[in-house]
Image (cartoon, rainbow, N blue to C red; front, side, top):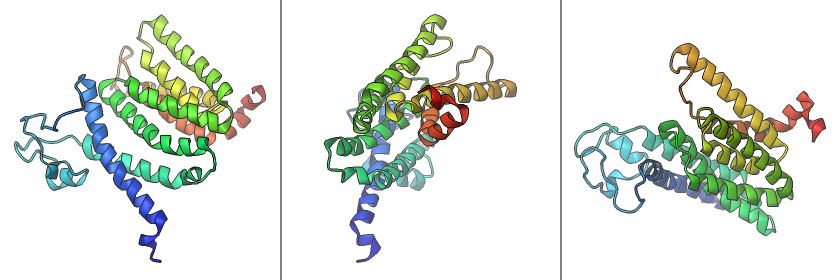
Length: 265
């Protein structure tokens, strides 16, 4: 059988194509959610208000074909559109390849984790872009991530420990927000680290907690030195929480062993 007709190849192509479509919808969620608008109704050009036809809504292709401009008024379009669509497609392709074995696990937990991995990835993309662009961490995306974390903890059999560590991390960030009156940390950051800590589990969540602070501190100092930010400027912290969690998922075991922190857990 030719490779392009194999079930695995077809499945991966379907995941990639589905990611493009979902990525297009995520742009709607990000942009309309920032202004409190609903997700229903036809898509329109933000500049001229013309309703877009289906030829203008094909993920990535329409953007390139129109040379990054509105077909009606010629207004330049944001590169956010193809970037979010492309990143979502690649994320779905990776998940389909990486977590496909879970779909064949003869347990409800394994299949549940596999199915929830895709909306969790979509939620991460929404959170990163929304925080960078609008300094907003949507509750719906955070809740989706937390649900995936509960399913992952249940599948690992460590849900109680994971939830306890996630609660401690979340409460610490929430305390920073409360006592600084929002100057050091946003309330959404506490909810986000609770969700990411559930996803990666304990003790990886401890490494993720530390990584997020270190990354945020290094980037913050770097931006101040460059003059891009001042001491009173607010830097979106959500992306650092997410990057820290991803790093912890990959290297937490080695990090905890090298630092001796593994002896504490």
